[in-house]
Image 1 (cartoon, rainbow, N blue to C red):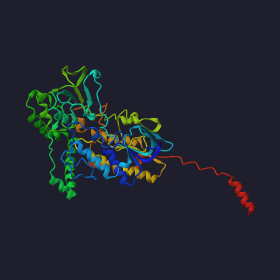
Image 2: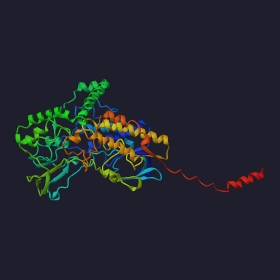
Image 3: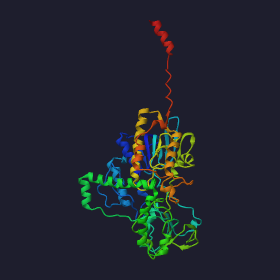
Image 4: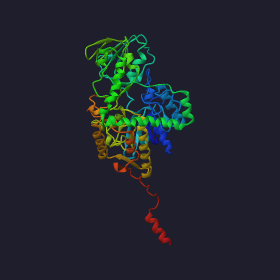
Length: 513
């Protein structure tokens, strides 16, 4: 990267959001852009999360770009290695390699109000851009709780998103902290190999059976030969989930039937009444993320597994002490404790108008206009921003909707001219956020009786979209300029003519006449 290179668009991150933005920019005819990636390869969360058993809980044909269908998914729910390979394939097919700036972590990006551009300092140099598209994603920075005594632990400690593949868990006493989606996949994968597995569970999750199977060669051949069949498959998967949204957002009581299926799943696998009681949630299904697994409960029922119905409170050497006082001796600790979702670290590195950081602007709670732009941060937008998450469908659908908005944003700026920028009006941001939060009040995430990672420090759901993907696509189809303030850079000063003054030249010409 050359010093002070200037580009039209800088994309931050190379996961689904960043690569999707890059593809869309090229399809819009924009080639003057870079993709800044802090790691040495593309893939985002599907590069970082490589723990045993890692897989997607959204069907493969729905968890892929509509403009880049993959007829050769090997399973109905694909594993991490297949999704990462798909993203590498997208990078190659759409010619994105020349735009990549790998090992270029963004240190700070600062708005230059004089020249209406962003100055971006990275670990590999400095550049500037007219527009920044932040696609770092909410599941990129692991959250590890500050447990008293963790520095005294003599064994191995790592987060699920930073798995240490050089450490052999076979024959070890392992503690799994957390019961989220990662833990539900890790526990069955490592349980047969470890000597003892202790699961520290603050809140039991609802777990539905995961109907996964290999996709036959005949099916894949059909999808390659007749692409419309893959499109129909995707449409069916989408339609089913779109019909389910009403239960999550408007009529949570309708989830009782789903809850009964989850209870039967628990009763079939767990015969011990005491263990079953520890694993039975006391909140409405859907309030927290519903997990899909047909192996999680059977693994917990094995004799080398102990479920502690309490969080980890303290560490004394190799002894882990739960909040309820129970103890466990372990050799390794695996944290499956999620990510910085409502307090994304990238926000500290975005410095907008007046030197105010995005973290400061979002201190009372994250909010943006249509999940994309924030007041005081001109020509900056985020992919998978506030209230764009989903509770039951594919995030790729939301990403593609935001790419529509990004594309129109760039078009609008092209029409307005080079020395122009758009800054979301505070009133527009507040109005959008008010509508979202009003709709949130009747959703299962607000009425279900749980505390989830969807909520911020104030108990406000700033994460999930309270509607259908169709509604969101309609809301992000075009940029409404009435929701933005137009900023203009001062015109460059005209050079002063050298030599005789204009007046003197005119007099000489008249005299000559």
